[in-house]
Length: 361
Image (cartoon, rainbow, N blue to C red):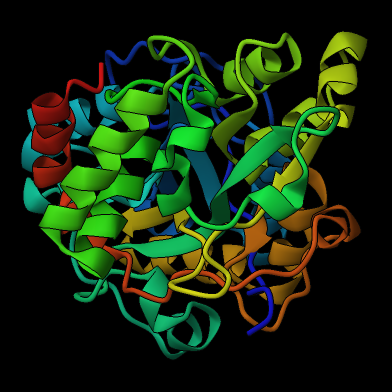
């Protein structure tokens, strides 16, 4: 089974809507209105208000293009995912946000569980986003895909030694595995996928085995794990493809050097497939401009937008008819896990408990 075709997503601009108050957001000026400059009393039929944790230039340009094509003004508040979810909950039905955009199904599911999202359907979204990349109740849709892969030191590891996530628990990898902490939503979703695919007992055994083989106490980001491999602290790191792309295309020459010393390996190709996750969007329960919000998600899942996302953001297209960028293709084709990603959110609490149980800090 060949590599799924996936790609991009929405960005972070600046926010909006005079009625939107009090978020610790960073703002940039575009055709989109900032929180401080957005006029009072806008006609709701002409706007869509977004809470987003994305902050990419490509996303910003796509939102501007959407506005030009539709005449709908896009207002964005950006902030950290958890802050935005908390803000939505605090504002309740009075929130002016129409769309929540965030990374990882774990967060999208949390927003759904708190009653902060609503079902949103259209023929276009049904065509653009595969069933396994969207909420089973249509409360969120994946817009970009990231694979959680293994990166390894080219000078110390023969890729023929690598095979599956499960193999990383073998004693041959003792003191050689680098991975971030249990508070990482990406690791929580990875373990949640193992619960869905292999069952809880085997998921516990895997987490315990990784703890036994860790090169150091978990710390830092995905990119920090890659840097630690090159520094010789360990031989293999678990990280998202997206972050490897950022290293490889960094403005910091030292980060580029790090990336070039690493190989990318897609695990579990002969078994259950490589774990994937999404950045996605959900229409808020309080949306005053639901129709416009759906139009924006349709636009962002379109072939044109997805191609731009894949080229600039190092993420796989969610839309199955869109080819990944040449850079992504250069890493090789891969078979992804095919479980419905809703299970990642449903199993999140259990995954967190398992991490605590096995001592994954």
